[in-house]
Image: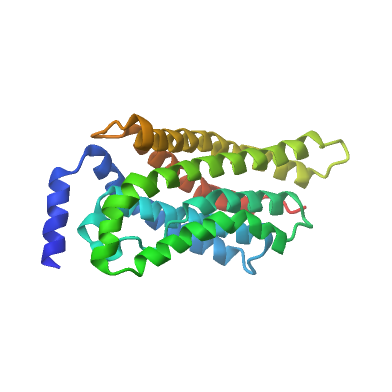
Length: 262
């Protein structure tokens, strides 16, 4: 324990402004999301349909940010036992929000076995973390500091950016299609719902562009450009965007319950 405490103090002494920002800003944000998940889940009982997918989305964002918070603030380096702790749900964010949009737009939508294809890559990604976490402490720490940062992390960032962008794009297409189909006979609650979804998801679509840019640049830099940044501001922007999305999800959890029912 004393060793971990001394390592943490050493980190705080040498941390960059970006690392301190993530560390300090992450604590209240994590608490905020935990409160919102429980509050929304409690108000949504019985949890079903879009509400269930919304909670899944909030949980996946919380877990993913918790992993980034631990990783970027160097907590994992100072506490090797938590290396590869299987809470990284980055590749789940796009498919989950896509399922939420479909279940919110279409009353008759039901998740079937065919929809599992959207989660093949996310499941494989999480399985790697489970496998790596079960390795001996010294072996997984070496894997984290070497192969992960130089090979796996760039591919992970690129995959996250591409998947997030594609699912946001197609989800937004669904929303725009329903908006174009509005007529004078469309019930008012349906119009309000589509209008809310368009405003709600517009931010995720814009954020997906940032994730895509960061992911592609991270991969290109790791394998081709190979610039060693003391502070990668694009990565900090990517983390900040994730923070904004989490706050947006929590804020709209309240609005979603106030929407008129069709």
